[in-house]
Image (spheres, rainbow, N blue to C red):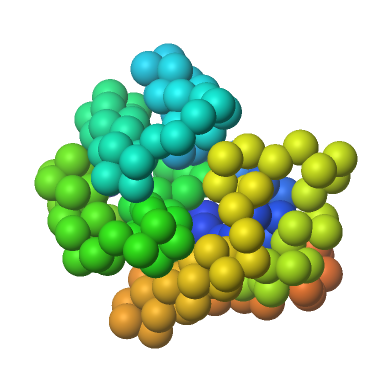
Length: 204
């Protein structure tokens, strides 16, 4: 039996990593085989691309940035995610193509359909069974980032992150069956329970 593909999305500081960890721990405790991944950086090649796209000093053009993310995505899906799903595992991943549509499409003001098209080609059309979107005001998200150690995207100005948030919400409105939108200001326990409830429905 094929497995599941679950992704977490949201602005910086929205608590994706915390909720991803809660879900993975719960799935493992209930006897499921779980594979964790992230974008960028879910593979050895991806780690090199992550360093390039997030921490390289100096300008990267928006189209080049989008293509680097797509390259990471293509390799991650082909070598890690799709084989795990076909083996019956549950893949839980931090960010996927919706991040590119929001950050490179809306944030960098590229055409969202073009950015999506690149990712759909790179992944041979693979979409998640569930995308958890943790929605948060960008100002609150920035305040949550400890130590002010921002990467290339985190250090962008408020209007960039406001466009990202609007894009995420528009994506969720367009695909309500795939997205679970949660208010990231709610408690950690509340969010974890809501996510478990939606995943349980998929498992049955």
